[in-house]
View 1 (cartoon, each protein chain N blue to C red):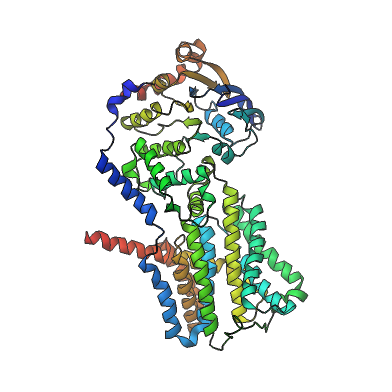
View 2 (view 1 turned 60 degrees about the vertical axis):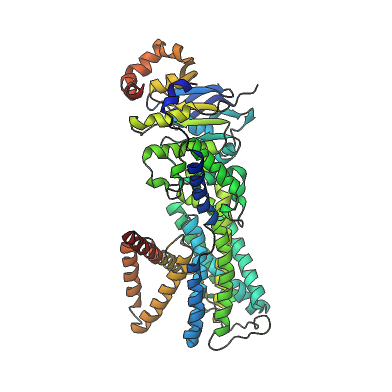
Length: 259
Length: 348
């Protein structure tokens, strides 16, 4: 079976600075992989390389077996690659419902239509409401995004990605900036994701990583230090030295609140 | 994967009736948003009323209507798609000169086909320049659009033997509308003609704004990063709307030449680009009717002030803009909305 996402030898440099060094990994269908590493390890850069925001200096990205290295960001999205952003990227002046309808519209090519009314397709609205209901956002459907508390906005961020009906989903710190009293709402959603979707999650909270991931990739200074199953990673001396040694204590605190 | 751990934290889904109610209310908002509201008849009633109230000012009236069309085309790209431009006069000018040169050099004096030709010519220039320029945003785009208008103007100046240069193409003659309704001294015919064109253009713009494509434009304005991430062909969307807006601006320019029977290269002026932007901001961007209100307020004020003080009238315009930016950031229409909201709240 072809992997949902296959990253082969990605390199990226900004001048003399190597931010991504020879990174390779695969996401099988339904994979649950966590990408961890200290601040500045190049995790978000890697997401940007996979989604096409940045072009790699060398290396290849395959989505469902097709080489998408040269494809535009939008083209990759239409082929089933969705992401969430570490910092919300939402249509703040629009309602939550419109945020989702827009996503469905672009997914299905409705947005090429200049003449029909956007509200004319009840099926789109119904599907959008289904997505919102599954994330318990239906009550906020008609609120403007900017009026929602940050934690709810993080859910909209995920709702948009799910409305794309992705086959591969990249979650960049989905609970970042959310108070620990609310972060469980987001992590529940992450837990309940469709088992067919291949998911890569960047997360600092080791409790979340341990709970969610079946495989972990550790990124240090742009390169893969080690990858493997959670238990092996947690007990790996190199990982402890490089990553948990400096960051583990602080990162553990949020997990402790609800773990 | 850890369902057992999370199940107790998940609130139960909304029960049948309440759930359906929430859904229907949400859907009703989107399903009905594009319906015509009675208040939308107001500007049209006002335009017809003006025809009967100020029968001797209809030459001025048709200039107001032309600027509304021009401002409406800017609203489509600035207000909805968030494209900032200081060169929108380029398309007004192309339209104005398509009709002007057609009449002066080719004897093409039928007004409606001239209008169509002007729209197509401007749209073509919009498409070509948009294809190159719309990869850029913000200040860079501002400078590039400004430069485009200047370059077109200077091209006209270079061939002033053909274009008439800054002396213009005077004394153009146009055939009666539909071969029947001739130009009259009071501008009655042209006022109604311009108004009819505005109505058609407005209907089209309104459809576009409420279409899924229009929604995508709003998305680009609100967050272009996200639009890329959900798979929107952003560049194509922008080029498409820029082409349409250019065509409409061309129609405004063509009407300008036809109603004045005269055109000079000043239609390409930076002044013209800036003026239409001031009008739109004054009225309110991204609201369709902002163009109506802004262009009318600006033109009437300009008319009165320039009569009061032929040398210093621009001071009044400047003062008005300062006040608008300080106290009505979303334009006069935005101010009206705020006042309406205020009364609604104090009543309930």
